[in-house]
View 1 (spheres, one colour):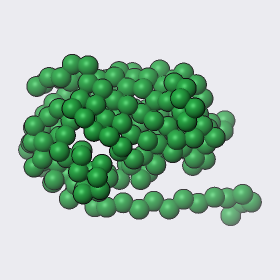
View 2 (cartoon, rainbow, N blue to C red; view 1 turned 135 degrees about the vertical axis):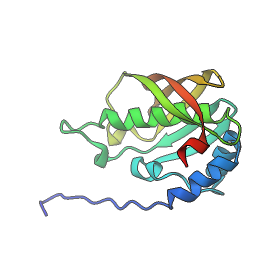
View 3 (cartoon, one colour; view 1 turned 45 degrees about the vertical axis):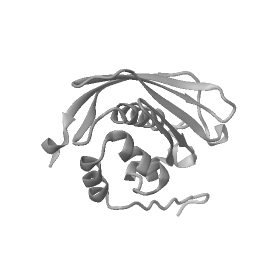
Length: 168
């Protein structure tokens, strides 16, 4: 190993059990069970150091702790981490409005990166809010702030609503 090599170990629960629970619960109940720890977080949360903090109807809040493992070649957090964080809060905000047996998939996402992020930026807070719920398409917006409260990125997304039975 080269001098200065770092490692990171990632552990997660079997995602199939979580997906099965998601087909049985209304979106807000499903997300609240994850927030309280009654259901495990999906594997992406371990990969990206994300934690679900709050769930409301049409609104969610996550925290993400960026570290050096998220850096791009120029020594700042890769935009993909922030895009994934925003896609997560936008999707979960939409999911919180859905009945049992329904899920979503992102149709599109548009991200505006406003400031660079490093490990020194501290924990990121991301809030996703539904701007227009729907039975076929949901529209949502999101914001990410750093530990100082500075706005570092925003996003808009459209989410396709679909029965989860199609995914089985």
